[in-house]
Length: 221
Image 1 (cartoon, helix red, strand yellow):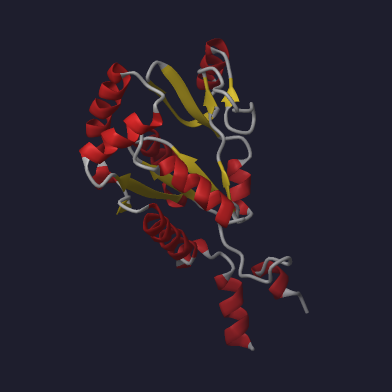
Image 2 (cartoon, rainbow, N blue to C red):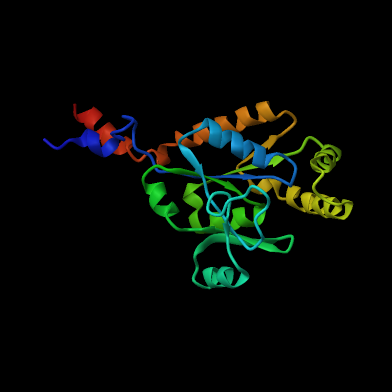
């Protein structure tokens, strides 16, 4: 008899096989998506960061191929020309893009990918691969608190912070385009809500491709 269990389960975990997902966290700068992303990557071994390509220079401590793929303007142009990106956008004079690479193959094998991108990138990604995309928008508790957080970083001039606040207002206006919205008034509580979303989305019937052979075997047993 054929081993139908092998078709429906992951041999390493004995879990029903499922298709991976593209988990997008978006927020205005300073609202917490980067912190939440790091917390999620530390806490959940089943998801890994999608590494973007960018034309900006590395910041202190950033490593090529780990934090970003740092590329020249010319190389980025070629990647756009050859349709190598799921999505790309220009932010504060630099371009950022998500290379397709091995992501599509990883999704088939149940690998989840985390994306830290803005609303423009989110819309592009949904247009190319809507079935695998789950979107979460993180709101600050108030604009005054958002400005306080940006100022507390002590990284930007007042002019840059003003520009970030203006961009934040534009980004927040797109909140209704996301599947889920959470308010980051407390980072631990917000993180718990994000994990609840991820856990629930992994259990979607359409994503659990191992259910069909499992139920067939169940009904025939």
